[in-house]
Amino acid sequence: MRKFDVVVIGGGPGGSDCAIRLAQRGKKVAIVEKKHFGGTCTNVGCIPTKALLYVSGLYAGIKEKGKRLGLSGELSYDLKGMKKHMERSILMSRKGTEALLKKYGVAIIKGTAYFDRGNFYVEESGEELKGDYYVIATGSQPKIPATLRVEGVWNSDDVFTMESIPQSIVIIGGGVIGIEMATLFSNLGSSVTIVEMMNRLLPNEDIDVSKAIEKSLTRRGIKVLLSTAVKKIEKSETFNIKLNNEMEFSSERVLVAIGREPVIPKGLEEKIDTNKGAIITDRDFKSSLPNVYAIGDARGKVMLAHVASAEGVYVAEKLSGNNPEIDFNAFPSVVYSTPEVASVGLKEEEDGLKDGLKSFLFPMSANGRANTMGERDGFVKLVVDAKGTIVGGSLVGAHVSETLMELVLAIKKRMTLKDLSEVIHPHPTISEAIRDAVEGLEGNPLHI
Image (cartoon, rainbow, N blue to C red; front, side):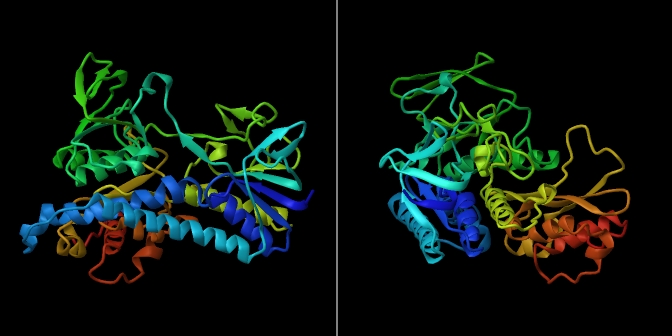
């Protein structure tokens, strides 16, 4: 039996980064992974989705804007070639993670961890996992209610095994996963319908973001049904979908994208405090069990790869005797729709801003770089408090995922409008729209 300072259970971004940082701090570390390193993000989430979205976006962009931009000629796509690009992206990320774990001397244990009689074991080998501390980083899985578990209905993992693009698809869920999948299939010519229970798409984003994305998707031919639930799905030659408003229609494919739910090691769920299937922790990520921590999607809080990574590094530093900080007021969020969405900090709800907050929205149609790309949709919206401190930012437009970090730093460092207005932004760039929004809040917009 091997003995470790820390045993990390789960090899996704949270678990892997936690294990690597612990090893860098001189700890004897083991990591247990039942399948592939990289977790959901690398294998059935961020990486494959963005690989397919990038290629399909190139195709759709030329089809939609080519004539206006002076491009002509026949254009087609090859799904097999697209999937090869996707698989290369996955493999490089997966192998890179495993190589780094080996580089820093982390003991790799392949197998499924479970909890029994007060200890962790490996199901396949029976080996006891003996550590002074344990970090649960087991991630999440697609959530599918029993009423929607019909043979042939896809979850978000299934999309990456498809052999053809469906002529029509119904996507149940208008959150991040649903919007990205709708964008992907629309790019490749599918007739797409989104069914969302809430009264707006992307309900966790700013209200103006929700409106802009609904408008953009609708203009591209995607049908959006809000405040609507799927009552029943029946399978014949196609899928027959019955809604709660008595509406019925058929579709070649159905994709359930209503979110994800935590995965907890077998046997542990009965011994550890949970809430709706998620492990409850304190602010230092300690669970109710002595010497057992939990990070990432297993906590059921902010289910994003980069947040899991930050939590993993925090726990590693804590277990190494350091005093790290983590700021959940400044975590970024990105949706790879067309146009992209990127946000951080406070958002405006349907009933407006409160507590002396104010906002300004600068349209991308007035941005030089956006116009050169033919990407006029979107805006930069900033939220500030009564003192002029930046507390929130929402961006919609081309490449805003790469522009957001200016606002993440601004919120993290409690920067003011004056701080940003004094920074010279390069021209022409999308980032100039941030400065323009700042000037709008100061009452002196130069470009609208």
